[in-house]
Image (tube, rainbow, N blue to C red):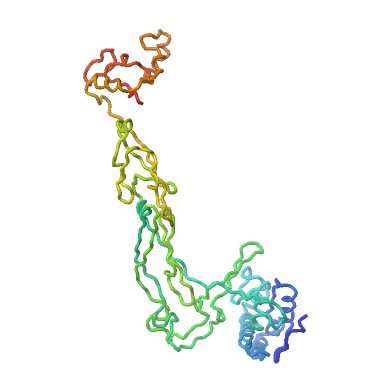
Length: 461
């Protein structure tokens, strides 16, 4: 099946490569189990000397000369990393013992056995079908009509987002507000442009991640279950290479960054809500080779006493009016001070004022303002003369039900027993005017023999 591949000069297809090709062409989801001994071409019983000799020979042969010159560097790089990874495990007695016993150089439970990558060798990237096609030129043009090799593109790593909190009032959300915060962050060194070394310094490929900048981390998540992820190499800090100490940048001392202090401005729009977030793109810490993260400001409610309550885009508030205003109405009354400082005046309490609610975020519209009327009743004995109360009662309409109810003078003993215990709850609206008890001021005796402490309820209550 693989005999139609383009012929190469100085490159001999090994049993491993044939198995790899067969797997790719017959099953797109094929996973290669790479044996470290087979990579070096030695038996599992090989001595340390034989392994070292095989490593040197394999390394010299890895610099192959194939038909397409543009692929020489890529082919050599992949082959060399494969050989180096195998030798690093097999040349170490502990790692080799773990590999022979558990299929992983790190020991029991640390890897994936023979099932992925180089026998579970955690520091090497996966070598799958896409890598094989890229090995022959970044696609499958040489394989006769195979579509794009599906080269995997990992997202560019980015620095962590910075999170800030701010407390604002309801008025701030109504009017909108700009919050200014002084921030200190790490930015790339201006002198070395974030490299950490002086210009012209020679770099050396990291021996841990082999130039990739990342290492594979494999964790056991359950019985027979593992998961893997790629993390930054701690040796080269994700760069893939290292430098000599003497070549470090004189300004940043090799740290690649320096501190910068600036004032950040966060615009909280009108109509925002508590819990909303304002994002400033690319204002977090900078790191070489990474996309800069964001600074995120979260809006919280300030502890305060406000006469307004917000429900969605509407506002609710209480309005205190006198009994006379409730009965007769009023005109041009200064009701309250709005959240933007305006004084609202109304003539008749309609209960709802259109377009005086909360601004709707992203538009010029507003919700409605709802007024809850609280009637302030006059205090007890608010009249100075009985005649004043009589004048008020004369102009108020009387209830038709009053004529149908018995007066206290007409009820018999049985009826009085029924209502005697509930006399305080009798509705005075149904009692005729001439039968109301006379009120006296403090210190006077009542004509009908009531106690001085007795205070009749207000008719409206």
